[in-house]
Image (cartoon, rainbow over all chains, first blue to last red; front, top):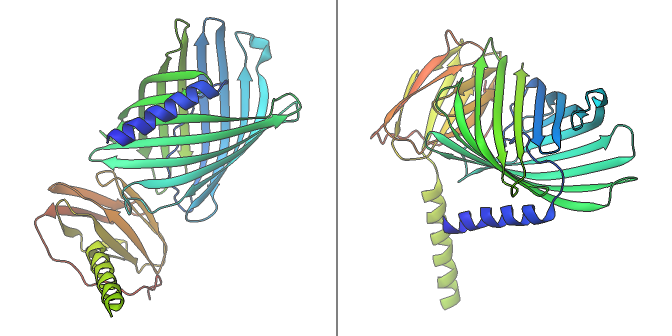
Length: 233
Length: 125
């Protein structure tokens, strides 16, 4: 247990030193269901001393096989209170791979690969992540370790780390409270999150997530609100 | 001679470990959109392997919030779900494609009855 905590602290400290854009986003689970299709919408609002930054993701995804899921995103962003600035920022393709059967090993593992291109410039971002989930009674600990590589006409070629953690209590299907932690890009944030799932007919279900993350970056204000809604069918 | 003895002992030790590592298996069948048996008893505080055969011509999804498991079982195929270790209690599950008929419950108690291991083929007739 001590080793495990030391490992997490080590990841936090590395990410805090090395990185520099925003890290609060979805915490990925290492599971894929065959035949699954989904539409997803995500909203992020980041409030700092300089102003408010809003971003939205719209995505469509489908399972390629029993263990692999593909998702395509369109990302929009508005910078620091400039309401005229809201527009298409980038495109992203994502592949999520379930590496182990749920519950078979001590913990469940998955991998994530993303490729993102800026809409109006030749700038790219490639991401590889290791996804981890451990069931502990009625709770689940999920961790994502990201390696992000950036390059392009306006981006300095660089490699960065991100770390996301979610500790969730599976209270009711519709309401599952959690604590989330994010580090990376000179940011360390912790806060409460709530999520749930409402099932409809057959594979049709609506998943929702909302988190309020408080940044711990000295005396500067840096709070984030994240909302995600997924319709699976 | 000593080397041989050491090797044989190592093999036996490995084999013993493999035997101990085998999970108790329990079988569940889906026929006419119903789970058979509808009640499964498994031992407490032990990880078990639930082997589910789908004899129907349509897919089914094993779904359980209590067990924290979701798994699609294709028609005429078998699928494996690992559950536990769990404390004593009742853990309900249902078939997401036929939630009104395909229902069941896993009862965790001190039972020690374990089914025989199954053949490796994933196809069922």
